Length: 469
Image (cartoon, rainbow, N blue to C red):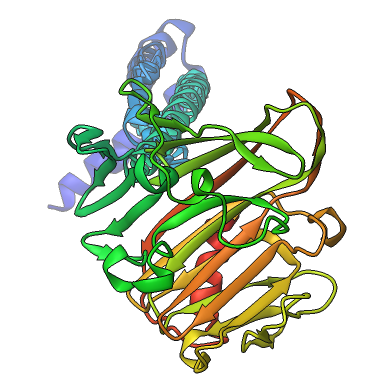
Protein backbone atom coordinates (compact mmCIF):
# COMPACT_ATOMS: atom_id res chain seq x y z
CA UNK A 1 0.00 0.00 0.00
CA UNK A 2 2.77 2.35 1.05
CA UNK A 3 4.55 1.40 -2.11
CA UNK A 4 1.62 2.43 -4.17
CA UNK A 5 1.48 5.79 -2.52
CA UNK A 6 5.14 6.39 -3.19
CA UNK A 7 4.63 5.41 -6.78
CA UNK A 8 1.92 8.00 -7.19
CA UNK A 9 4.02 10.69 -5.60
CA UNK A 10 6.85 9.79 -7.89
CA UNK A 11 4.70 10.07 -10.91
CA UNK A 12 3.43 13.47 -9.84
CA UNK A 13 6.89 14.75 -9.36
CA UNK A 14 7.87 13.37 -12.69
CA UNK A 15 4.98 15.09 -14.36
CA UNK A 16 5.85 18.41 -12.86
CA UNK A 17 9.32 18.09 -14.10
CA UNK A 18 8.15 17.35 -17.58
CA UNK A 19 6.01 20.41 -17.62
CA UNK A 20 8.90 22.64 -17.30
CA UNK A 21 10.92 20.95 -19.92
CA UNK A 22 8.02 19.89 -22.21
CA UNK A 23 8.34 20.19 -25.96
CA UNK A 24 5.77 21.83 -28.29
CA UNK A 25 4.81 18.58 -29.85
CA UNK A 26 3.35 17.11 -26.73
CA UNK A 27 1.17 20.14 -26.07
CA UNK A 28 -0.66 19.59 -29.37
CA UNK A 29 -1.90 16.28 -28.42
CA UNK A 30 -3.59 17.59 -25.30
CA UNK A 31 -5.14 20.46 -27.16
CA UNK A 32 -6.89 18.09 -29.43
CA UNK A 33 -8.77 16.53 -26.72
CA UNK A 34 -10.01 19.90 -25.53
CA UNK A 35 -11.05 21.00 -28.86
CA UNK A 36 -13.29 18.06 -29.10
CA UNK A 37 -15.21 19.27 -26.25
CA UNK A 38 -15.71 22.66 -27.80
CA UNK A 39 -16.85 21.32 -30.99
CA UNK A 40 -19.73 19.70 -29.30
CA UNK A 41 -20.99 22.89 -28.04
CA UNK A 42 -20.69 24.41 -31.48
CA UNK A 43 -22.58 21.82 -33.12
CA UNK A 44 -25.40 22.63 -30.81
CA UNK A 45 -25.35 26.12 -31.92
CA UNK A 46 -25.49 25.11 -35.47
CA UNK A 47 -28.53 23.22 -35.03
CA UNK A 48 -30.14 26.22 -33.55
CA UNK A 49 -29.41 28.32 -36.43
CA UNK A 50 -31.18 25.83 -38.52
CA UNK A 51 -34.18 26.40 -36.54
CA UNK A 52 -33.95 29.98 -37.39
CA UNK A 53 -34.36 29.30 -40.89
CA UNK A 54 -37.40 27.41 -40.24
CA UNK A 55 -38.71 30.15 -38.35
CA UNK A 56 -39.51 31.09 -41.63
CA UNK A 57 -41.66 29.72 -39.30
CA UNK A 58 -43.63 29.37 -41.98
CA UNK A 59 -45.42 30.93 -39.59
CA UNK A 60 -45.12 32.51 -42.68
CA UNK A 61 -48.30 33.63 -42.17
CA UNK A 62 -49.66 30.90 -42.71
CA UNK A 63 -51.14 33.47 -40.98
CA UNK A 64 -52.17 33.62 -44.29
CA UNK A 65 -54.31 32.49 -41.84
CA UNK A 66 -55.87 32.36 -44.79
CA UNK A 67 -56.33 35.75 -44.62
CA UNK A 68 -58.58 34.12 -46.45
CA UNK A 69 -60.08 36.14 -44.11
CA UNK A 70 -62.70 34.67 -45.58
CA UNK A 71 -62.88 35.45 -42.25
CA UNK A 72 -65.95 34.86 -42.96
CA UNK A 73 -66.36 38.08 -44.11
CA UNK A 74 -68.90 36.10 -45.47
CA UNK A 75 -69.63 36.68 -42.09
CA UNK A 76 -72.83 36.23 -43.32
CA UNK A 77 -72.89 39.73 -42.95
CA UNK A 78 -75.42 39.23 -45.48
CA UNK A 79 -77.48 37.21 -43.39
CA UNK A 80 -78.18 39.50 -40.60
CA UNK A 81 -77.75 42.59 -42.42
CA UNK A 82 -81.16 42.18 -43.80
CA UNK A 83 -82.51 42.46 -40.49
CA UNK A 84 -81.07 45.73 -40.06
CA UNK A 85 -78.65 44.45 -38.19
CA UNK A 86 -76.02 46.73 -37.84
CA UNK A 87 -75.18 44.34 -35.20
CA UNK A 88 -73.69 42.24 -37.88
CA UNK A 89 -70.83 44.45 -38.30
CA UNK A 90 -69.90 43.87 -34.78
CA UNK A 91 -69.75 40.27 -35.24
CA UNK A 92 -67.34 40.64 -37.99
CA UNK A 93 -64.84 42.50 -36.28
CA UNK A 94 -64.67 39.97 -33.69
CA UNK A 95 -63.84 37.61 -36.22
CA UNK A 96 -60.93 39.84 -35.88
CA UNK A 97 -59.55 36.71 -36.51
CA UNK A 98 -57.87 37.87 -33.79
CA UNK A 99 -56.86 34.74 -34.34
CA UNK A 100 -54.08 37.10 -34.62
CA UNK A 101 -53.23 33.92 -35.45
CA UNK A 102 -51.51 34.69 -32.65
CA UNK A 103 -49.51 32.40 -34.26
CA UNK A 104 -47.84 33.39 -31.38
CA UNK A 105 -47.10 30.03 -31.68
CA UNK A 106 -44.51 32.05 -32.67
CA UNK A 107 -41.82 29.97 -32.85
CA UNK A 108 -41.90 29.82 -29.29
CA UNK A 109 -40.62 26.80 -30.61
CA UNK A 110 -37.44 28.70 -30.43
CA UNK A 111 -37.64 27.88 -27.05
CA UNK A 112 -34.78 25.80 -28.04
CA UNK A 113 -33.22 27.92 -25.59
CA UNK A 114 -31.08 28.42 -28.39
CA UNK A 115 -30.46 31.59 -27.22
CA UNK A 116 -29.71 31.87 -30.68
CA UNK A 117 -33.15 31.98 -30.98
CA UNK A 118 -31.82 34.22 -33.22
CA UNK A 119 -34.71 36.09 -32.32
CA UNK A 120 -35.24 34.38 -35.34
CA UNK A 121 -38.36 34.15 -34.06
CA UNK A 122 -37.53 36.11 -36.90
CA UNK A 123 -40.32 37.68 -35.54
CA UNK A 124 -41.07 36.30 -38.70
CA UNK A 125 -43.91 35.98 -36.75
CA UNK A 126 -44.01 38.65 -39.07
CA UNK A 127 -47.09 38.68 -37.39
CA UNK A 128 -47.78 38.89 -40.75
CA UNK A 129 -49.94 41.64 -39.87
CA UNK A 130 -51.16 40.75 -43.19
CA UNK A 131 -53.72 38.64 -41.69
CA UNK A 132 -55.14 41.42 -39.57
CA UNK A 133 -55.38 43.90 -42.32
CA UNK A 134 -57.18 41.76 -44.71
CA UNK A 135 -59.79 40.59 -42.40
CA UNK A 136 -60.82 44.06 -41.34
CA UNK A 137 -61.20 45.39 -44.79
CA UNK A 138 -63.35 42.68 -46.13
CA UNK A 139 -65.68 42.56 -43.24
CA UNK A 140 -66.58 46.22 -43.32
CA UNK A 141 -67.32 46.36 -46.94
CA UNK A 142 -69.79 43.55 -47.18
CA UNK A 143 -71.81 44.33 -44.14
CA UNK A 144 -72.66 47.90 -45.04
CA UNK A 145 -73.88 47.19 -48.49
CA UNK A 146 -76.34 44.48 -47.70
CA UNK A 147 -78.07 46.04 -44.78
CA UNK A 148 -79.07 49.28 -46.49
CA UNK A 149 -80.71 47.80 -49.48
CA UNK A 150 -83.03 45.34 -47.89
CA UNK A 151 -84.58 47.55 -45.28
CA UNK A 152 -85.80 50.14 -47.78
CA UNK A 153 -87.65 47.64 -49.86
CA UNK A 154 -89.76 46.30 -47.05
CA UNK A 155 -91.08 49.67 -46.06
CA UNK A 156 -92.55 50.39 -49.46
CA UNK A 157 -94.56 47.24 -49.57
CA UNK A 158 -96.58 48.02 -46.48
CA UNK A 159 -97.77 51.33 -47.83
CA UNK A 160 -99.41 49.77 -50.85
CA UNK A 161 -101.53 47.38 -48.87
CA UNK A 162 -103.14 50.20 -46.89
CA UNK A 163 -104.28 52.02 -49.95
CA UNK A 164 -106.07 49.02 -51.38
CA UNK A 165 -108.15 48.37 -48.32
CA UNK A 166 -109.52 51.92 -48.35
CA UNK A 167 -110.68 51.55 -51.89
CA UNK A 168 -112.70 48.42 -51.12
CA UNK A 169 -114.56 50.20 -48.33
CA UNK A 170 -115.72 52.91 -50.73
CA UNK A 171 -116.98 50.50 -53.36
CA UNK A 172 -119.88 51.92 -55.38
CA UNK A 173 -123.45 50.74 -55.11
CA UNK A 174 -125.07 48.86 -58.00
CA UNK A 175 -128.41 49.40 -59.71
CA UNK A 176 -131.26 46.94 -59.21
CA UNK A 177 -134.06 46.23 -61.70
CA UNK A 178 -135.54 48.39 -64.46
CA UNK A 179 -136.03 52.11 -64.07
CA UNK A 180 -139.33 52.20 -65.96
CA UNK A 181 -141.55 49.90 -63.89
CA UNK A 182 -144.72 50.69 -65.93
CA UNK A 183 -147.90 52.46 -64.93
CA UNK A 184 -146.16 55.82 -65.01
CA UNK A 185 -143.77 54.87 -62.18
CA UNK A 186 -140.02 55.29 -62.48
CA UNK A 187 -137.66 53.76 -59.95
CA UNK A 188 -134.04 54.32 -59.05
CA UNK A 189 -133.17 51.30 -56.91
CA UNK A 190 -129.61 50.61 -55.86
CA UNK A 191 -127.82 48.41 -53.36
CA UNK A 192 -124.56 48.20 -51.49
CA UNK A 193 -123.74 45.42 -49.04
CA UNK A 194 -126.86 44.75 -46.98
CA UNK A 195 -128.43 48.15 -47.78
CA UNK A 196 -130.95 48.87 -50.52
CA UNK A 197 -132.32 52.29 -51.44
CA UNK A 198 -135.47 52.86 -53.46
CA UNK A 199 -136.50 56.19 -55.00
CA UNK A 200 -139.85 56.25 -56.80
CA UNK A 201 -141.33 59.08 -58.87
CA UNK A 202 -144.24 59.39 -61.26
CA UNK A 203 -145.14 61.61 -64.19
CA UNK A 204 -148.57 61.98 -62.56
CA UNK A 205 -149.01 64.64 -59.86
CA UNK A 206 -146.68 66.99 -61.78
CA UNK A 207 -143.67 64.72 -61.75
CA UNK A 208 -144.02 64.00 -58.02
CA UNK A 209 -141.60 61.97 -55.90
CA UNK A 210 -143.63 59.25 -54.18
CA UNK A 211 -141.11 57.25 -52.13
CA UNK A 212 -137.59 57.33 -50.79
CA UNK A 213 -136.73 54.42 -48.53
CA UNK A 214 -133.78 52.57 -47.06
CA UNK A 215 -134.23 48.87 -46.37
CA UNK A 216 -138.01 49.33 -46.38
CA UNK A 217 -137.99 52.35 -44.04
CA UNK A 218 -139.89 55.13 -45.81
CA UNK A 219 -139.20 58.80 -45.06
CA UNK A 220 -141.88 60.46 -47.26
CA UNK A 221 -145.56 60.95 -46.50
CA UNK A 222 -147.69 58.53 -48.60
CA UNK A 223 -150.80 59.66 -50.47
CA UNK A 224 -152.92 57.42 -48.22
CA UNK A 225 -152.09 59.61 -45.20
CA UNK A 226 -154.01 62.65 -46.48
CA UNK A 227 -157.48 63.39 -47.82
CA UNK A 228 -159.98 66.15 -48.47
CA UNK A 229 -158.39 69.55 -48.95
CA UNK A 230 -154.96 68.07 -48.30
CA UNK A 231 -155.34 65.21 -50.79
CA UNK A 232 -152.48 66.53 -52.97
CA UNK A 233 -150.17 67.22 -50.04
CA UNK A 234 -147.97 64.08 -50.09
CA UNK A 235 -144.59 63.03 -51.36
CA UNK A 236 -142.22 65.72 -52.64
CA UNK A 237 -143.04 68.43 -55.16
CA UNK A 238 -141.38 71.47 -56.79
CA UNK A 239 -142.90 74.94 -57.09
CA UNK A 240 -141.98 78.35 -58.38
CA UNK A 241 -141.21 81.01 -55.75
CA UNK A 242 -142.29 83.53 -54.55
CA UNK A 243 -145.73 82.30 -53.57
CA UNK A 244 -147.70 85.24 -54.89
CA UNK A 245 -149.67 83.16 -57.36
CA UNK A 246 -152.49 82.46 -54.90
CA UNK A 247 -153.85 79.10 -53.74
CA UNK A 248 -154.02 76.35 -54.86
CA UNK A 249 -150.89 76.15 -57.01
CA UNK A 250 -151.29 75.92 -60.78
CA UNK A 251 -152.42 72.40 -61.74
CA UNK A 252 -149.48 71.93 -64.16
CA UNK A 253 -147.11 72.62 -61.28
CA UNK A 254 -148.89 70.48 -58.67
CA UNK A 255 -151.19 67.76 -60.00
CA UNK A 256 -151.29 67.29 -63.77
CA UNK A 257 -149.67 64.33 -65.51
CA UNK A 258 -146.59 65.24 -67.44
CA UNK A 259 -146.25 63.48 -70.76
CA UNK A 260 -142.73 64.50 -71.68
CA UNK A 261 -140.71 61.74 -69.94
CA UNK A 262 -137.47 59.98 -70.91
CA UNK A 263 -135.19 57.42 -69.30
CA UNK A 264 -131.46 57.02 -69.95
CA UNK A 265 -130.41 53.60 -68.67
CA UNK A 266 -126.72 54.28 -69.37
CA UNK A 267 -126.62 57.20 -66.92
CA UNK A 268 -129.52 55.92 -64.76
CA UNK A 269 -131.37 59.18 -65.28
CA UNK A 270 -135.08 60.05 -65.37
CA UNK A 271 -136.09 63.32 -67.06
CA UNK A 272 -139.60 64.83 -66.94
CA UNK A 273 -140.80 68.18 -68.22
CA UNK A 274 -143.97 70.14 -67.60
CA UNK A 275 -146.12 72.07 -70.04
CA UNK A 276 -146.31 75.87 -69.74
CA UNK A 277 -147.14 77.27 -66.30
CA UNK A 278 -148.53 80.79 -66.08
CA UNK A 279 -147.03 82.92 -63.32
CA UNK A 280 -145.65 86.41 -62.71
CA UNK A 281 -147.01 87.78 -65.98
CA UNK A 282 -145.21 85.24 -68.19
CA UNK A 283 -144.95 81.45 -68.68
CA UNK A 284 -142.43 78.86 -67.49
CA UNK A 285 -141.65 75.20 -67.85
CA UNK A 286 -140.12 73.05 -65.12
CA UNK A 287 -137.72 70.24 -65.98
CA UNK A 288 -136.85 67.63 -63.35
CA UNK A 289 -133.87 65.33 -63.73
CA UNK A 290 -133.39 62.52 -61.20
CA UNK A 291 -130.28 60.31 -61.17
CA UNK A 292 -128.08 58.27 -58.81
CA UNK A 293 -124.59 58.88 -57.48
CA UNK A 294 -123.64 55.25 -56.93
CA UNK A 295 -120.40 56.14 -55.16
CA UNK A 296 -122.05 58.54 -52.69
CA UNK A 297 -125.12 56.27 -52.53
CA UNK A 298 -127.40 59.24 -52.92
CA UNK A 299 -130.00 60.63 -55.34
CA UNK A 300 -129.26 63.78 -57.37
CA UNK A 301 -132.15 66.10 -58.16
CA UNK A 302 -131.68 68.82 -60.74
CA UNK A 303 -134.44 71.37 -61.35
CA UNK A 304 -134.48 73.76 -64.32
CA UNK A 305 -136.88 76.69 -64.71
CA UNK A 306 -137.16 78.16 -68.21
CA UNK A 307 -138.96 81.37 -69.11
CA UNK A 308 -140.98 80.39 -72.18
CA UNK A 309 -142.97 83.65 -72.32
CA UNK A 310 -142.15 87.15 -73.50
CA UNK A 311 -142.01 88.90 -70.12
CA UNK A 312 -139.44 88.76 -67.35
CA UNK A 313 -139.84 88.44 -63.61
CA UNK A 314 -138.16 87.40 -60.36
CA UNK A 315 -138.31 83.64 -59.81
CA UNK A 316 -136.64 81.16 -57.46
CA UNK A 317 -136.59 77.34 -57.13
CA UNK A 318 -138.54 75.77 -54.24
CA UNK A 319 -138.62 72.12 -53.11
CA UNK A 320 -141.41 70.99 -50.76
CA UNK A 321 -140.93 67.58 -49.12
CA UNK A 322 -143.72 66.20 -46.94
CA UNK A 323 -142.96 63.77 -44.13
CA UNK A 324 -144.83 61.82 -41.46
CA UNK A 325 -145.76 63.55 -38.16
CA UNK A 326 -143.66 63.45 -34.96
CA UNK A 327 -140.27 63.70 -36.61
CA UNK A 328 -137.39 66.08 -35.86
CA UNK A 329 -136.18 68.69 -38.40
CA UNK A 330 -132.99 70.72 -37.88
CA UNK A 331 -130.54 73.04 -39.66
CA UNK A 332 -127.77 75.52 -38.85
CA UNK A 333 -129.01 79.08 -38.34
CA UNK A 334 -127.90 81.81 -40.74
CA UNK A 335 -128.41 85.54 -40.28
CA UNK A 336 -131.59 87.39 -39.37
CA UNK A 337 -134.45 86.08 -37.26
CA UNK A 338 -136.91 83.23 -37.31
CA UNK A 339 -140.50 84.24 -38.07
CA UNK A 340 -143.56 83.20 -40.04
CA UNK A 341 -143.12 86.01 -42.56
CA UNK A 342 -146.37 87.68 -43.60
CA UNK A 343 -148.32 84.44 -43.64
CA UNK A 344 -150.40 85.09 -40.54
CA UNK A 345 -149.52 81.61 -39.17
CA UNK A 346 -148.02 80.99 -35.74
CA UNK A 347 -144.26 80.46 -35.69
CA UNK A 348 -143.33 76.79 -35.87
CA UNK A 349 -142.08 75.69 -32.40
CA UNK A 350 -138.27 75.63 -32.38
CA UNK A 351 -135.13 75.70 -30.17
CA UNK A 352 -131.86 77.33 -31.12
CA UNK A 353 -129.11 75.37 -29.36
CA UNK A 354 -125.60 76.64 -30.03
CA UNK A 355 -126.55 77.89 -33.49
CA UNK A 356 -128.51 74.82 -34.62
CA UNK A 357 -132.30 75.18 -34.88
CA UNK A 358 -134.31 72.10 -33.81
CA UNK A 359 -138.02 71.72 -34.66
CA UNK A 360 -139.86 68.84 -33.00
CA UNK A 361 -143.10 68.08 -34.82
CA UNK A 362 -144.63 66.63 -31.67
CA UNK A 363 -144.93 70.27 -30.51
CA UNK A 364 -147.30 70.99 -33.44
CA UNK A 365 -150.72 70.68 -31.86
CA UNK A 366 -153.02 73.17 -33.59
CA UNK A 367 -154.82 72.31 -36.79
CA UNK A 368 -154.49 75.96 -37.77
CA UNK A 369 -150.92 75.17 -38.73
CA UNK A 370 -147.50 76.71 -38.10
CA UNK A 371 -144.84 78.20 -40.36
CA UNK A 372 -141.13 78.96 -40.05
CA UNK A 373 -139.07 81.26 -42.28
CA UNK A 374 -135.33 81.44 -41.67
CA UNK A 375 -131.96 81.90 -43.29
CA UNK A 376 -129.80 78.80 -43.07
CA UNK A 377 -126.06 78.19 -42.97
CA UNK A 378 -123.93 75.46 -44.50
CA UNK A 379 -126.34 74.48 -47.28
CA UNK A 380 -128.15 71.57 -45.60
CA UNK A 381 -131.51 70.70 -44.05
CA UNK A 382 -132.13 67.40 -42.21
CA UNK A 383 -135.09 65.41 -40.95
CA UNK A 384 -135.33 62.16 -38.98
CA UNK A 385 -138.19 59.97 -37.88
CA UNK A 386 -135.92 58.22 -35.37
CA UNK A 387 -135.17 55.31 -37.72
CA UNK A 388 -133.62 56.92 -40.79
CA UNK A 389 -132.16 60.37 -41.48
CA UNK A 390 -132.78 62.40 -44.66
CA UNK A 391 -130.11 65.00 -45.42
CA UNK A 392 -130.83 67.50 -48.20
CA UNK A 393 -127.78 69.43 -49.40
CA UNK A 394 -127.77 72.42 -51.77
CA UNK A 395 -125.98 75.69 -52.47
CA UNK A 396 -126.13 77.98 -49.45
CA UNK A 397 -127.53 81.47 -50.13
CA UNK A 398 -127.53 84.72 -48.18
CA UNK A 399 -130.72 86.04 -46.66
CA UNK A 400 -130.86 88.83 -49.22
CA UNK A 401 -130.63 86.35 -52.13
CA UNK A 402 -134.00 84.75 -51.32
CA UNK A 403 -137.14 85.70 -53.24
CA UNK A 404 -139.37 88.49 -51.93
CA UNK A 405 -141.14 87.53 -48.67
CA UNK A 406 -139.44 84.12 -48.76
CA UNK A 407 -136.42 82.53 -47.04
CA UNK A 408 -133.85 79.79 -47.62
CA UNK A 409 -135.41 77.46 -45.00
CA UNK A 410 -139.17 77.11 -44.57
CA UNK A 411 -141.30 74.68 -42.58
CA UNK A 412 -145.03 74.16 -42.43
CA UNK A 413 -146.73 71.90 -39.91
CA UNK A 414 -150.14 70.62 -39.05
CA UNK A 415 -150.80 67.65 -36.77
CA UNK A 416 -151.17 65.27 -39.77
CA UNK A 417 -147.83 66.00 -41.46
CA UNK A 418 -144.91 68.39 -41.90
CA UNK A 419 -143.41 70.14 -44.93
CA UNK A 420 -139.60 70.35 -45.01
CA UNK A 421 -138.73 73.05 -47.57
CA UNK A 422 -135.71 74.92 -48.93
CA UNK A 423 -135.31 77.53 -51.68
CA UNK A 424 -132.51 78.65 -53.98
CA UNK A 425 -131.48 82.15 -55.00
CA UNK A 426 -133.98 84.29 -56.88
CA UNK A 427 -133.13 85.49 -60.38
CA UNK A 428 -134.75 87.84 -62.84
CA UNK A 429 -135.38 85.50 -65.74
CA UNK A 430 -135.82 87.20 -69.09
CA UNK A 431 -137.63 85.60 -72.01
CA UNK A 432 -135.88 82.39 -73.07
CA UNK A 433 -133.55 82.33 -70.04
CA UNK A 434 -133.20 79.42 -67.64
CA UNK A 435 -131.84 78.70 -64.18
CA UNK A 436 -130.80 75.29 -62.81
CA UNK A 437 -130.72 74.33 -59.14
CA UNK A 438 -129.20 71.10 -57.78
CA UNK A 439 -130.11 69.23 -54.61
CA UNK A 440 -128.74 65.96 -53.21
CA UNK A 441 -130.80 63.59 -51.09
CA UNK A 442 -128.84 61.26 -48.80
CA UNK A 443 -130.76 58.73 -46.71
CA UNK A 444 -129.02 56.86 -43.89
CA UNK A 445 -129.85 54.79 -40.82
CA UNK A 446 -129.76 56.66 -37.53
CA UNK A 447 -126.19 56.56 -36.23
CA UNK A 448 -125.44 54.40 -33.20
CA UNK A 449 -125.99 56.25 -29.94
CA UNK A 450 -128.05 59.05 -31.52
CA UNK A 451 -131.62 59.95 -30.68
CA UNK A 452 -134.25 62.12 -32.33
CA UNK A 453 -134.04 64.81 -29.67
CA UNK A 454 -133.11 68.48 -29.89
CA UNK A 455 -129.42 69.14 -29.28
CA UNK A 456 -128.26 65.56 -29.83
CA UNK A 457 -124.60 66.03 -30.76
CA UNK A 458 -124.11 62.55 -32.23
CA UNK A 459 -126.94 63.17 -34.69
CA UNK A 460 -125.72 66.68 -35.53
CA UNK A 461 -122.12 65.56 -36.11
CA UNK A 462 -123.34 62.72 -38.31
CA UNK A 463 -125.39 65.06 -40.53
CA UNK A 464 -122.68 67.70 -40.77
CA UNK A 465 -120.28 64.97 -41.84
CA UNK A 466 -122.59 64.00 -44.70
CA UNK A 467 -123.14 67.63 -45.72
CA UNK A 468 -119.37 68.20 -45.89
CA UNK A 469 -118.82 65.43 -48.43
